[in-house]
Length: 144
Ligand SMILES: [Zn+2]
Image (cartoon, rainbow, N blue to C red; front, top):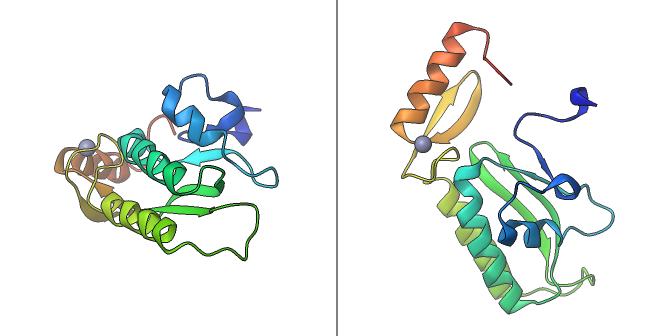
């Protein structure tokens, strides 16, 4: 079982450690999608805020994917289970959160820059970028 669970993945159905507001986000995953919130804890406040905004615009919105990709939040959702409905405000809220994530440390939520470490793009504050670099140069990242 351990082989299947990556270090920072948070599964919606094993989400006891998540803040209550983030559990609400995890519960929005549509049935056909794995309920995995695959981002670092530094982005949790951003996600909770986004969830609140989206819930106001579209109370029954459904979530498909929520992950970190090339150092940015990748958030795929639609206002309802009808894929033909387009909501400009809904799309703009997601775009704004994704943009904000590129300036927010994924580890701690502090203001951040983007770094290429170990052939991957990370959005990290100076402190966490230095830590990640040290792990990467050691060649054997501890833990993960
Ligand atoms: Zn940080």
